[in-house]
Every structure is written in structure tokens, then in C-alpha cells.
Image (cartoon, rainbow, N blue to C red; front, side, top):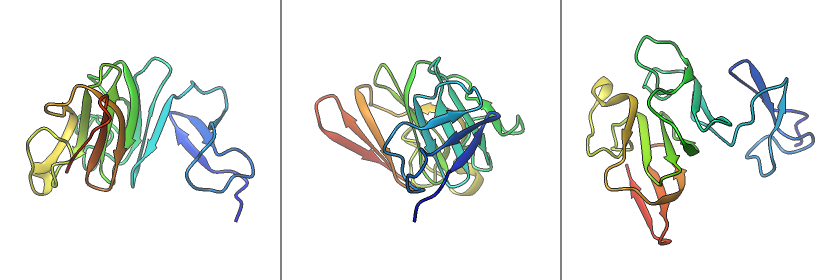
Length: 165
């Protein structure tokens, strides 16, 4: 079935699938409506959306119940993720988010019950929440990220893969 449009609100801007494309993963460039900034990477989790803007900052909005939008608890559910700059790629799992910076380092935040943040910790319930980005240990040469519900995979510059969570 073809969808006429798939709209997402991010920071007051609407993002849309190209006309006539199936409502699903986007293989082509995303049309930006309403004079929005250019996003270089966009990712959706179960109840949140994050994007890398033209200044290489990460902007997220949606539910922050598990810290997945990277904002300090009680600071709202929309805005730039503090402490991150020079970001090349953003990926989201069910309740966590990770960013690959241009230097190859990877930073993650959100729910961490399965170790998907990659900082060597895990927890249960609220003890597993990271409201701000934590650097993934031992990873400084990532060239691409893929996320599952509660795990992450990074392609390294050597062509090898590492996973956590």
C-alpha cells in the first residue's frame, strides 16, 4: 500500500516521506517541509525521535521516560542533547539512543538494562537509566552504527564488527 505522506514533527518542523513511497524505511532523501534545518541523520525509537542537524548537534524529542532523548530528568522532552558535538550519525533502539561522532567515538544514553549504553554498567528499572550521553568503552574507530531494540552493532574502520547490549 502506498502512503501519500508520512509526517513527523521535530522541533516544529515536519519531515515527510517522498510522495508515493511506501510508509516504512526511507531509501531516498527525506523531504523537509516548512523551512526546517537540514538533518543529516534521523532515527526513531519506540516513542522518541532524534536527528543530527546541519551544525552536527543532536536534537531529540518524544518520551524521556527512560532517558532516550538525552535530556536531564525534568528538563523537558525536546531540545539539543547537551554535551555532544560533531556528530555524524544517530541511531535509536527501543528506549536508548546512540551517536557516532566524526572522530569515531560512540556515545549512548537511555535505558541500559541489557548493557546497550556500552559503558560497562547495567541495572534494573530506574537504576539503569542514563539521562546524558556516556562514551562506549574502547570504541574510537566506528564508521557506522546499527541498533536493535536493546543492543548495538558498530562497523569499525578495519571492517570488523563489534556489538554490545
